[in-house]
Image 1 (cartoon, one colour):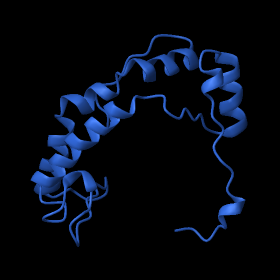
Image 2 (cartoon, helix red, strand yellow):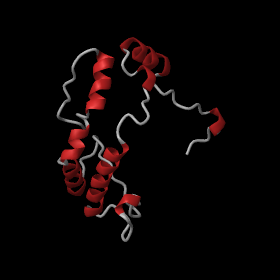
Image 3 (tube, one colour):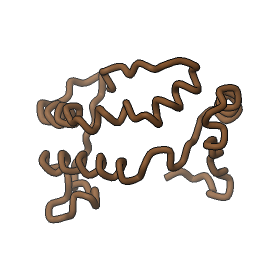
Length: 133
C-alpha cells in the first residue's frame, strides 16, 4: 500500500461522455494520460469470465482449500508470475496454457464495446492480434 494520503488522490475522469467523438477522446487521453470508461463492459460477462478463470486457479491448487473459488483467496505461499528473464516452471506454463486456451478469455479481446472504443480512437477497424500475452 502506498503512503500517499487518500485525500491527495483524485477520482478518475469518466470519459464515457465522449465515447463516440475521436477528437475529444484523443484530447482526454492527452490531458489525462488515460481513458476511463466505467461500466463499459457488462458486469455479468466480466463475472462469468472471472469465475471461469478462478476455476482454473482451483484446478491448479492455487486457491485456499475449502474456500469458494469466487472468493478468490489464494493458497498460502502461492505466487504465480511469468518473468521473461526466467524460464517458467512446467506447472506455471500448464496453468497459463489453460488460461490462454479458454474460449471466453480470448473472446473478451474481441468484445464489440472494446473494439468500438479502439475504432473511434484510432479511426479505423481493428485487427485483434491473436497473441494476447
